[in-house]
Length: 369
Ligand SMILES: NC(=O)CC[C@H](N)C(=O)O
Image (cartoon, rainbow, N blue to C red; front, top):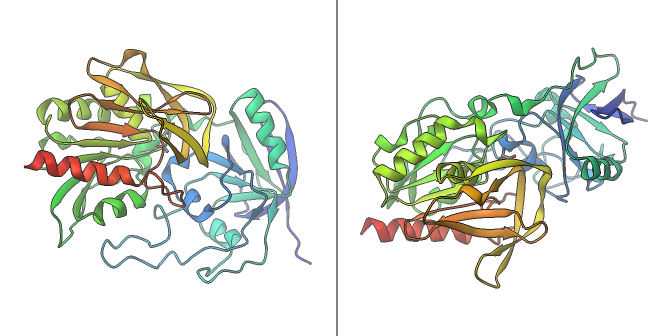
């Protein structure tokens, strides 16, 4: 019989959930968010956009397929093969049923061991659907995850007040040189998921990954990718200024934004962002392409949304969320600039919107001529 220490999740409104500890034995505090995705914990946990957040997964059975080898890399890019960054970014993990025994061809260790190595605590044996109902009714809340025998988290820490992007972005320029490159794309790294790099590289591009606050308008490039990233987009003023500069200096160089990238492009286009009641985190968000009857099923992970009211002349909504009608993308009517709130790179799926990378590459090639 395996013995686990106890753990307690405390929400900001005082609600408490008692369960058992797995992963690191450490107490933490953060923003409690939920995801309804049924698969993909290795990818989600390494998504830098989850920085500062205690993640509740509503799918009950977690850990059953273990964790792949973090040392396995893709020879072309040198990036880890199976993860979205080089470490676990969530602050803590909340699940219903932890599988102590894992089984998968690709697994080399357990979820608990991987979390422990990364210093991230988990709690299991709690009713994640009830937690989710509370968050859906009262709105997203801060929380503490306390582990038996460890000093308790002192305060309800709000990660959205910090510049999280600065903490997860690269600090130097990293070039993924592709011997078959037919175009060069600058990737503004606000906490980019590695699959964005893979999706560009695999389309015959050399990817030049630059820090979040780098003035990329001075570089020589064929297109710009604005990455996803954690926290409040309003804190990325430096990136917003650089996007404005680049659009003014190089209006013929296509620009494509994903998630935080969409929010930052929207700010650069005159709009603002606001915090959603409880965010969109799942693999099955329906988004309608505005002006068509075409809906796509998308992967999402965001807590803020774009208020299109201030969008400048020439800009229009590109996609709308069919669940709550929030804006899911914008595009320029005449210039090659567009962005989406969802994840076309979408590890661990669904891949329905990966075609947007092809669209971006086609646009780059048209403007290169
Ligand atoms: N995945 C992302 O890029 C998230 C963007 C932003 N941090 C939000 O929560 O809305």
